[in-house]
Image 1 (cartoon, helix red, strand yellow):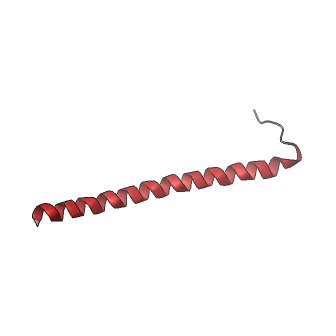
Image 2 (tube, helix red, strand yellow):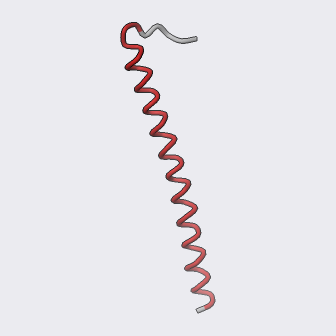
Image 3 (cartoon, one colour):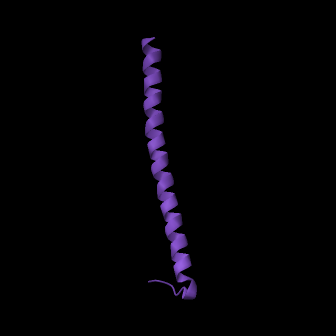
Amino acid sequence: MMPDLGKYGTEVLSAYAVSILLLVLLVLLSLWRSRRVRAELRDVEGRRKNG
């Protein structure tokens, strides 16, 4: 069920594609950074308990 975009269809669809790609990249970057920071916090807390 695709709306008729007329002569601007390519531009509109490419804008949607770029937006979706950027959103996916932001989510993946956030997840990657979250895991990294969580691991660093675990290390710091471990050193604090042992130190």
